[in-house]
Length: 109
Length: 224
Image 1: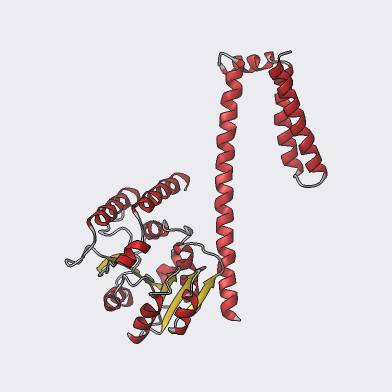
Image 2: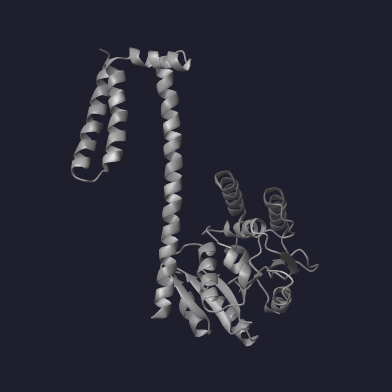
């Protein structure tokens, strides 16, 4: 086994362990926990059996297994970036609403 | 018809007192100043000058301030809402002209334009940017304006209800035009004088901000 594989397994195991702990402490929603730990579970599978990515790659018509992983990661990151942007915008609007309500309440006093 | 003048103000203690007093002396009783989380005495100065004062506990930007003032005016029976700058760039002498088309019911929005006057002393670089903005409005929103970002406007009650400002920052100026276009609000441009002073230029928009607004406009168009 290559050292990168061992490294991958350790990181993934740590992430799953952390998520489990947070979920147990009720700091993470169960749905998030399931998505998060399955992502890292896939990482473990790929680390132990690198051949699996080649199977998926062939399915998509992409040459190398590792390329599939890179493409998917980029897509997931863009998606998360977009989600984050939306969330920040939402929060900004809520803060403004709150500030506005406080202004009206102060005025009424 | 009850006329409200809405002035968002951020750190304007030096100018806001004079601006408010001028308006009240000119006979406009309902002057609403929104202190947008200023670090100076803007709130106190505006209040003692006789304005109706509202305070944002933290700074949220000019767009947020405008919406706070507009909603307040609507809730207090405003028939016409005028938006006005706090830094003394606008002239009270232009008020009757900008209010008139709305009061007569000819349009629902009267938008101030500094380029419809011949004696405008707009600095060339600013002129270039504002004209560029106007061109973009034509492309994006299909609205034909000579001045893209002028804070001097008069809105009918109806228009003020329809326009919903969600951009807290300076992008609100574009958003208002976008709303006017989307909601088919009838508008007219009215020539107004903008007095550029070193003070107002230093406090106002710089060129970099122009690019930021452009970026936001593009993003909004893509995401809407």
